[in-house]
Amino acid sequence: MTVLSPAQLEKYNSQGFLVCTEMLSVKTMDRVISEAKRLSGDEQLIKEANLRCQYEQNQRGDVLLNALDPVVDLSEEIKAIASDPVIRGALADLLGEPACLLRDRLIFKPPTTGGYCLRQDYIAWPDFPTTCTLVLIAADLSIQENGCIEVFPGGHKMGYLSPRDGCEHRVDAAQLGGLQGELIEMFPGDVLFFHCLLPHQSGPNLTQVQRPHLYFSYNALSDGGDQREHHYNRQMTRYFQDHPPSGPLKFFR
Image (tube, rainbow, N blue to C red; front, side, top):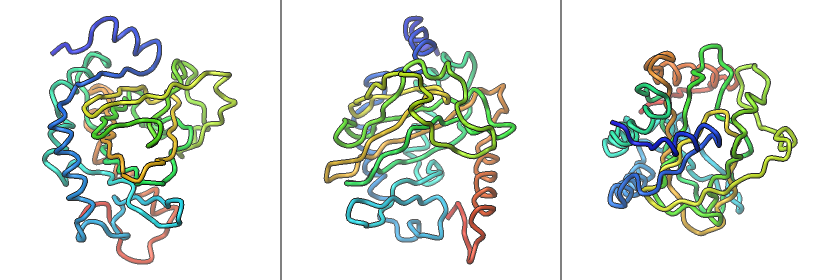
């Protein structure tokens, strides 16, 4: 199914990102918000020993749940969105072939928590897919006040800006050679597609409410096929290397 126009494909290729407004319905996003509330209140799931639970400290020093990674196996609603034919069709247009889900996250962005540093989403593992494409889905209003994403158009053409040591790195703004950032404000149901080499960052959530988003990564079918399980197993292995466990830890419930 062809979803994107030639003009949209040209914009993505030149800028490294594309915003598709109203790609998903507000009703669908309301269900995501309901799922976010349900999952964040699940006492059997939200535990420090569960590696899928990621936390962030707010301005008062409180430690709050910031993300669930992975998430599609916890929610049929979110799983259906990751396989949505319109999103998959747009990815096929961008990649020239079918896409496979690589990573899936529910980002809560709690109130008064900080943002994400300037970075690229490519990881220099030997077999990390070079076709990795990110999909950010606004479940709720995303504006500057609650820490919307900021992208640096054309930055994907600069290549990978960090050491190829298999670690995730902060990008220094000086490396961008004066590229100007663009804040991407989105309404519920809007979808942002962007290249894994596109530099991006986000600011703090200065409001008093959380801002849930879905954040999916995909790769082209020919670029390693279905690697989701391999990705999470490798991520867990690296975590244990850096943080020797003192008790039982796991990704999955």
